[in-house]
Image (cartoon, rainbow over all chains, first blue to last red; front, side):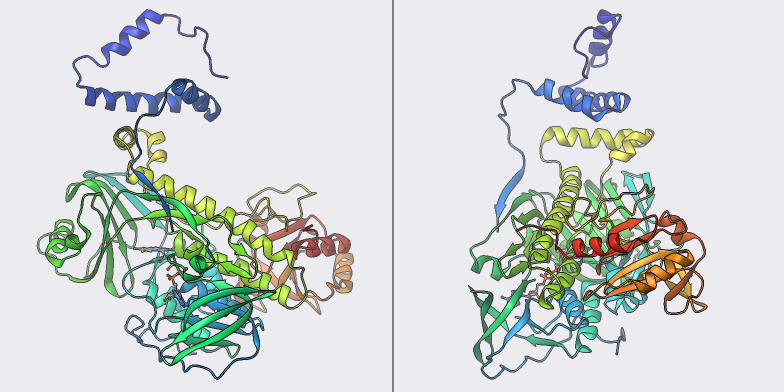
Length: 75
Length: 550
Ligand SMILES: Cc1cc2nc3c(=O)[nH]c(=O)nc-3n(C[C@H](O)[C@H](O)[C@H](O)COP(=O)(O)OP(=O)(O)OC[C@H]3O[C@@H](n4cnc5c(N)ncnc54)[C@H](O)[C@@H]3O)c2cc1C
């Protein structure tokens, strides 16, 4: 089960560290750091059910406005 | 049978087959398309006593550069069809791959790290050789009637069969069949003529396929680069084929112009960048592709069965196109044979769709995942891809996520209605529905392989049966269904007996008494810890579809 109740003993320290990790970075560089961070944390969690729950929670309420570069085909 | 590699199968022209006089008979099976899938299906049927007509609109085997990687399971099927040895001799065997990112190796893998297999994980062999060796084998079969430059130009499903309009250079004729196998490729005429469609997705990317002939000392391994120094920002794949020909596959991106990119003046500098300025090579083929993953919703339409590229398509990363198609052919051939002989109900034919549509989904899933990694479909998926590659340098977990192609493996039909579920406890991979593992054995003192002993019919493998089980096996009758009983045991009068040095028993998790029932396509149908005639009989009937309710 994905934890939604507090689980980080020093929440302000964590948040500060998270923001610090991006200090001075361009949006693109931050994107790279975030991507690595997600991969590292996902491996740490190591439980696909929880990861799926987290993905769904993160996606909640976001209406797709982008487009994937694949084309539907019929042959 | 001539199987000399000296024949230039790439250039070989097959004489157009004269138009037959008005045909009145209905053929049991007609196959449309003599690509690798149509040829394999035709051989399998004809070598097992079914008369087959194979029509192809062309007079050449595979043209240009297409499939090169043929997987172990496919080679085992070709062994059963009598042409595996010629292919393996001509091809370049390999099982190792390396993945590079920029100038460093991030990952290497071995697809077959253990000993005791007849065939390597893969061979690389040009598709025209594969078709050439299949063609030689097909020619030797009296029940196989191959007709070149006979194009299917019309398809009508009528009652319990199909009528085809065939066009030849000398004019048309009607060809009637009880069953039609549509192996007429990705642009399948038969599919369109029946108003059917294949659905899926195309990836916005282009790939240059360049084949070059050269003397080079790269090992026979699959080498894949992300963002190589010689081809920045894109991927590159290198494979060795027969006759000192190397396949290089350069990712170009969606904006590349396919007409321009295939010109030698564009291709040669790319190749030189990889091989070095001094490299001496000759460009033998260049073409530009865009890849899709798609499939038909149903592989059966009444008396018509779709197999190979007509039924499904994948990107080549993973080599799942021809390999899965050959497994379609094998799956379908024995079922048609049994139904035509009256040894199985019609419902058996529906399981072709059930099993091979499942396999197609698995192949499409794997191929799509690889293509999504190689060709990220959005900015964020590119970021995750690049992050994965950067982490892969020093993080083992990220190496597992790097996907340069998950290479073809045969499907396990774990939920097939033809399986008899286990009642006894077993360990290992050979669950009902799994393709049978091979193992070295000896027979009358000669070295052989388990799969070549099992043959084209149902087979019962009995490991070290007790004397009372041997008597029960002797008394067992499988009725009208041919069953080959093989004892993995010392010589016993009246039985085919083979000796195992332990590998077969280990792979089958066998103990004295363990019994496996194999289907004609060498997938496991059922297994028990001891032979029980009633159970084997029930499993055999189930495996030919008698338990399926229509
Ligand atoms: C660049 C590239 C690399 C690939 N690499 C691999 C790989 O490494 N491994 C792998 O497994 N797969 C690979 N593939 C896929 C593989 O080539 C195909 O999956 C395979 O050829 C499919 O075989 P098929 O018999 O279904 O169709 P095809 O090979 O297309 O054969 C269809 C046949 O039907 C005939 N035909 C068509 N219409 C008619 C008609 N109306 N009447 C009569 N005959 C007709 C055609 O002439 C042809 O002979 C690759 C493909 C490409 C393009």
